[in-house]
Amino acid sequence: MRSAARNVWRGLIVGLGLGLMALPAFAADLGKVTVGVLAYGTVNWELDVIEAHGLDAKNGFGLEVARYGGNDAADVAFMGGAVDAIVEDWLWASRLRAEGTKVVFIPYSSTVGALMVSAGSGIKNLADLKGKKVGVAGGPLDKSWLLIQARAKQEGIDLKAETEQVFGAPPLLTEKLRSGELDALVNYWHYAARLEAEGYRRLLGVAEAQEALGVPPSTPQIGYIFKEDWARAHPDLVDAFAKASREAKAIMASSDAEWERLRPLTKAEDAATLDALKTRYREGIVAHWGDEERAEAARLYRVLADLGGEKLVGSSPVLSPGTFWDGVRY
Image (tube, rainbow, N blue to C red; front, side, top):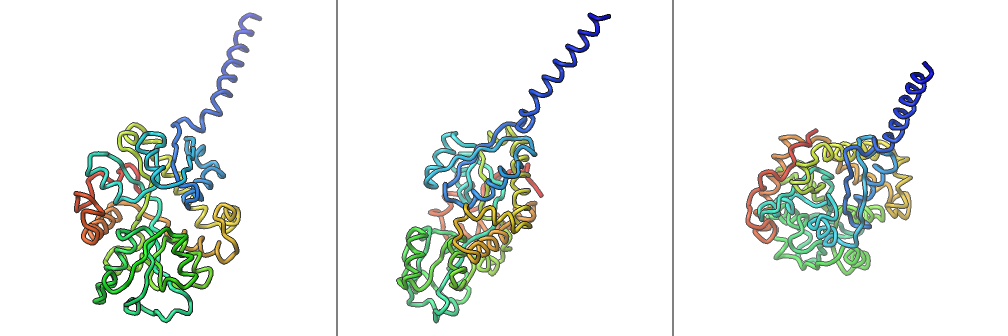
């Protein structure tokens, strides 16, 4: 009897020990996702929320973040297999697919940039830009610049021919606008938001230009990119990551206190800047991602392909089939 009792207790103790050993592993039973990002990029805010609230463990995976000094470095790391995902637009993903490198996209944000002028500027509409010096972050094939040009053409204005463009890095062009060396500036959303906080005026939001071209402003522009083979081997992990991403956005959409916690990461110098960043970020949260939204994104692709041609989209005038990962819908 005593021997039998000892065996029962041994079994219970061993079972309990194994159970306790399994507890830490449960949080990451689906595996790990390593995301490569710009060290100073805004996607860090969402990833920080995931980590701070344990949303990766809640959804059964482990998140790792690898930070790089530039987009090219992150892209190289992704292509070389050093990271599982990066943030890019679906233009890039579709072009890779057309060239034979199978990658897939899930949405991150629909927030895009804006055309900014100073508060006291006499420029009141697109026609007033004629003969002016316009800065463009991202180069002549920047999506925002192409969409703003297309919107201007609806009013019979050829911005490319009728303005002087200055291309350069966003921080440099921002300083040139502040110093008066530029009359207007097409810049990425967070730079534009900071300018808004300083009193600069949005002459035209890129989302507004997009809407005027027949595509809803809520259409996502950028997202997380995975290699298709990796996603097919880890579909539950992709789904879990996507859920954690949406849960983080839900917190950022509803909690002002969370933005106060994020303030050091945003590098917002004051309350006005933090409020502008918060407002514009929230505008870009993708509420729905189904067949309708995919169709709108494909339509926007065709608009951009017509505007930018082969230099922008490569050999495929339409969005490459399979670009959008079918396992994530909401």
